[in-house]
Each structure stands twice: as structure tokens, then as C-alpha cells.
Length: 149
Image 1 (spheres, rainbow, N blue to C red):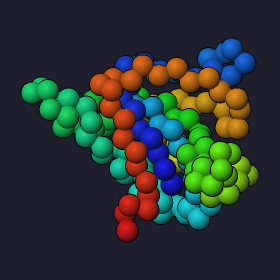
Image 2: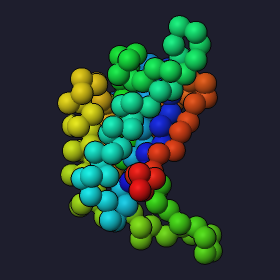
Image 3: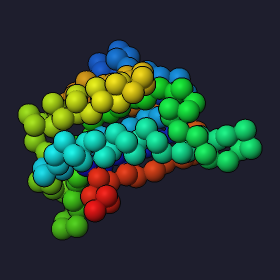
Image 4: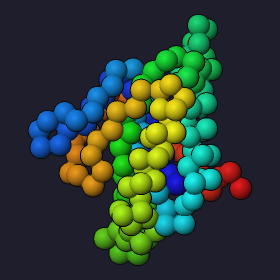
């Protein structure tokens, strides 16, 4: 599982020119699932996202998590995180989990975040989405579940 985490001042996602999800201060997550991902990968990633200390404390040091600051999350499904362009110029997505399996994983991932008291806005899984991100910092972190090994 891969998650691109961006600290955001405000962000939104639109489908067919209609805003379907938006947040003020918090995190934008671009979420991709590998064909071999299991629930343990999701649990690891939920813990990492919730405890990632990338918000400033009173001294201006990145020492607070999303839980500490009470921010929101905009979660966007992104199978292209597993695009492999090593051979040729057209990426291969064979390492990305197929949509019929990834959708329930993505929904469960978002529910697990919500279970910790976080407001989670989303796009529409599989839709052509337009994402507007006001990146704060800019702070962008790439998390991979295989790093837990």
C-alpha cells in the first residue's frame, strides 16, 4: 500500500464540475493498493497516517499529528501510484489492485480513519476526479506499507 500525504490548508475534489469532498486544514491522502495488500497493510498505514508528526507545535517544530491538531482528511483513491514506467513510456498497472478488490479496501481504510474521530472527505472511487490541493509548507511524505518489514 502506498499513501502520498500532503499537509493542506484547504483542498477539494470535484466530479463533473461538482465538489464531492472538501476540507479545510488537514491532510490530503492519495491512496493506492498493491495487488498483494492485506488488512494488516491497511492497519499499518492508518496508524502511520494518524501519528505522522508533520504539523507545527508552538515552537514551530513539526511535532504534532493530525490527531493533535484536530484536522480533517481528504482521501483520494489513486491506483496510478502503482504505475511502473521502467520499460517504455506507457506505465503498466499490473501491480495495482483491481478496482473490484481495491474499492472495499479503500472504503475500509477511510472507515478506520473515521473510527479515530477524524473527519474524512473523499472523492468517488473510479471517477474522473479533479483535485485542488493547497499544499502547506509544502509538506509531502510518501508512505509505503512494505517499509514496516
